[in-house]
Length: 333
Image (tube, helix red, strand yellow):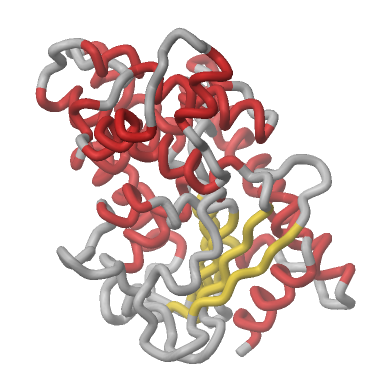
């Protein structure tokens, strides 16, 4: 049986409600998403003198609507989106947990590119008058984080990366939802597992490619796959797996230890390839090598790339021959 490539997409992929209600239109919508990934990979392979991938080799589970519907249900039942302003309110325990995770991810990203709260806040609001000791104390206690520090981090990230603050916030919201709401995470993983079983009912080897939030989903998936499912390679692109708050909440994470490369990832060198663009807001904490416990040295390697149409664009990541060729090679082993 030929090896298949499993594409795991990221957040913000849901269709509108009208398309969701029409099975034929929804199928066409998902197929267009799948072909966008495939076109990027084919471009990279052809540039390297390799043959393009056949569409029949691709498994593309679509959890976008399931995730979006779960968020709608959460909010319809009284749950509140984790807005930064909730730091200064008496939020319910579940909502407070979401806000703390969102804030931690925001500060992880800002710290990765040199956020200095004292300098940033004195620049935006000279009247605040924070000293380094004040900032150290504020950041040292999660529940005591002050809104000006967090808002300053968001403005800093937006200015330095050119990414609108609203887009940054919505990404962080979805990371918090996925990591902290167990039922929501399980719904997403169940869609991926179901589609994988339906497409490969008798098993077969796979190469797993996860983008953005999908790289977290892919990591979690590898901790849940049955022993009979062989994974030849893991590829992550535009991944937030470097964020400490993400690593803390991964499935299989052992307290007090770095997260391990999932046991499903082969032990041969470069069996996990992580691609990042230095301007990708989602992948600012890089490289990943050294952040995960490897079974053998060189099991996880990083590939820095430059995405011409957008730092986070999956088609650009896959169009890089240094990313496309290892995928092709793993499929042909």
